[in-house]
Length: 113
Image 1 (tube, rainbow, N blue to C red):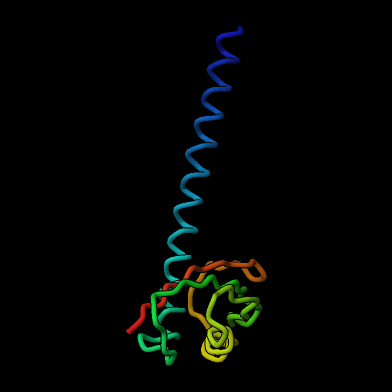
Image 2: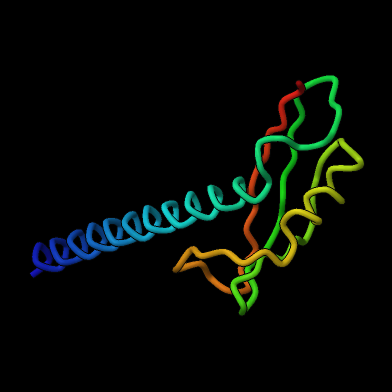
């Protein structure tokens, strides 16, 4: 009887691990699609003069109308916050499966020209 309980427990843990891994992979796919769409909104040429490559982290959420709402931009560059908000705030995204009201964080790397 103990061995049956052990087998059932091991099977349950294995199945829960497999299902949680599949859920993560689907979320990663949606996040990649969302990132691609955001990068297309930003474009390749950001009109800032930089001396060196810089990084930023954008925190945003998707509202009920599938629009991006910028929460914050963490960066060393002062003008980047205004620039990103003007280019991204309230732009509609067409990625299905995103959770409304969930806060997403996206790293951004800006290369100096």
